[in-house]
Image (tube, rainbow, N blue to C red; front, side):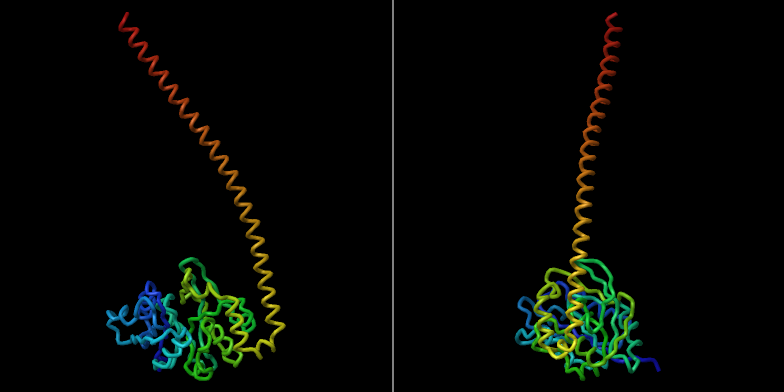
Length: 302
């Protein structure tokens, strides 16, 4: 018998109504049909997810709303409690799934030694690129890489870890990864860009970078102290790599700027020469016409 467990997609939502419908439709368009979608509106101040999604006639969709704003970690945990799936897939309300995401990832998680499956990530919106996340424990602890906050994992993993840390207002997804890896859970990587991560000015990934690192340190203090030398070395390598990248880009930018200025000067010269050439051609035409008319007039007079 083929492996066909129920998958619960859990979606926290707050105020980003311009993206919600696209995210929901990307779930409902999956070609793996044994799924449910649970949306938890974290007391949005300018909309209500229940109203925004009321027109969708889907038996697989459940929408709830918190009475007060409690944070995405609380909303994720509530969505999990309201769900029934053997497998869980968190998806932020501004991100998207390719239609084959579940069909291609579910078979990989059937292995009893695998706690979760993640894919390559396609950034879109303010940026456009594809990358494979580095999900080693040290790189995640050091904050030098972006873990996939959308990945398929077993409910058993959530039950063992106790879900997301609800006292964290941001960074709870990375902290979840850190606890899972430090507990010995294994993850499979599918090298296909089936998860689409939207980059935009209002995205949380653009905010509170230092605060997220400090939060993760406080939540896993003993683990960080155990690997302190490795974490600091990784962060230092990352900082110097960014410095080297900046210096390289700085040089390339000024080289391009110099070339642009030279090209601009050449264009100005070309423009002047073109205008002179046109003027000469017009002068010749006028002169020829004058000569022709003069000859005609002279012949008539004769």
